[in-house]
Amino acid sequence: MPHRTKGEGFFIAAMKKNPGYSVQSPVYNAKLKVKPALINIERELLVDLGKFSFFSENNTSIAFPAIHYDDFIFLKNRLKIVSAGIALGETKGKDFIPNHALAMSTELSTQPFPVLELEKADALKYLRKESLQEIPNDLPRGHVLVKYKNCPLGFIKNIGNRANNLYPQEWRVRIGN
Image (cartoon, rainbow, N blue to C red; front, side, top):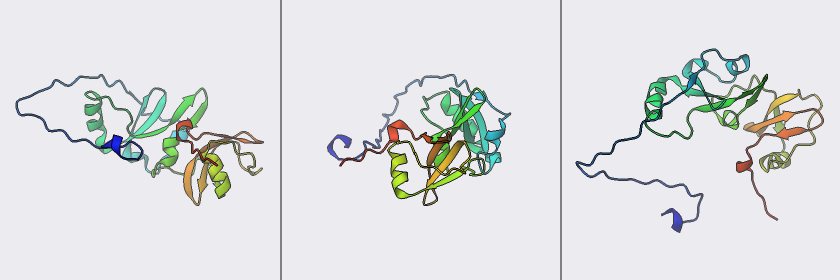
């Protein structure tokens, strides 16, 4: 019982349907913009593009396993899907802003992004969503994948003298004294 145990609030519930009882499920119209023509940066984001179908929803490009895409559309028309697939990022004007889900994906190809390996103190700063002040001068401007002990943490945007932290605000680590 989630209200009686300490934890993050995750739980599983099982229900048993009474025989003879039927419920009409709502029908949603899955209006997805299929994106067969990917922009150049999106072509390099994943290790194996052939395994995925691509679509756009709310200005976010999403990769979904092609083998399950038909099932996804079937469910999308009957259920409210909160999250599915790998959110690659948004295109704003001429800029592509990578999504944090892409950094966490095992399908991420690290080739399109320069990589910055962080020390423990800087990794904790990043996870607290603090800006990184001391970045190498030779680091290219733009989006950079940050790692700690070769484990991806997310993205920063190098703007020269400092870097903007793109770690999701709601995921930031709060460390007390």
